[in-house]
Image (cartoon, rainbow, N blue to C red; front, side, top):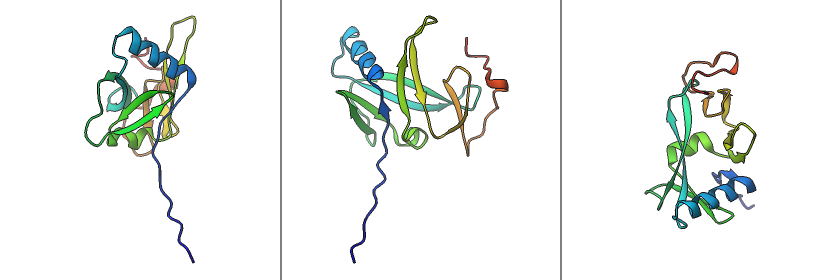
Length: 134
């Protein structure tokens, strides 16, 4: 009898709109070989917040995910909160921006940049509002 080993593959998904936007940013900033760092830090009205930056190379122990030619760097702690999240880019009349659909978040701020997970501490956003949502 063979034992099947299940491997938990941690990943982040990017929509086509997000990939296209990151590729455009890399060209505009003249850093075509950089990747997109996605991270989670403490703060925001829900206790944790998302962040993104362009970086030349991954750090030791980073998860490196490539989607549509775009490299995404995620540190191990952030990956615990972002596993299976989807990054999208939405362009609207009020302005465009990246949006993260995070299946690990039990609540999020009205602007979508702050969130709370099942085990995290943080102030609950009242009626989805956030003083930092501008």
